[in-house]
Image (cartoon, rainbow, N blue to C red):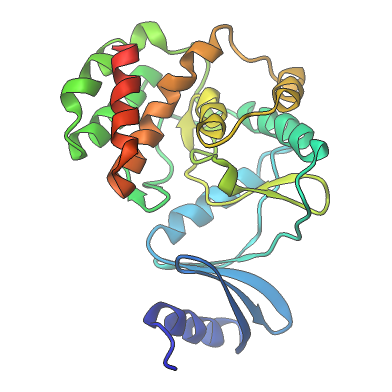
Length: 267
């Protein structure tokens, strides 16, 4: 059977750059586990590879931050990284993620926004902003315009000066749902698929809470390293609005109604 075009491209690209591919296992949509010259690697085809590679390198540069795979090869539509040896998630992984994520958020970023022009498969405007209110308003309004939700989201953007915390800009992962957290065999939580930018640390915490509960022990470990600003629980939904708009654009369905409900809550 003839291989799909994306996989054939990956094989050919890796053969030229690294050596023949002898084992291939599909991990997801346009993502494969490959073996090249005795090394197990993860190859991901599609746009955004350069931004993702830059984000991985930025995360790796922060002392104490969550570990990330090494970038082996990257071009405009292909990213190849090392693999992460995994084990079942445990309390030690949650403790480590809390501490390490707090270390990451202690790293300042030179501006608000900037960074990646992709959140997963969704393109976003990466232009830097001078303040956090302008950054988050621009991100919300740009996404809302593309899914025809400006009338609902606009009032939230107009209120951000009174809603947002005072911290930042910090380096944030930017797409930190549980699917992008790997439980390493070293008992640390490894991060993949970042959308690194200068933002609010609460963005990452809120994203973790969007598709799964954030364990209390993770939050305690985080707060031991970096206190969370007062009132953050009331802002979780506010920081979930942008990723819900991204999911509305990518998948539609109930994500649109969830985004509308959150926008009305903060309007």
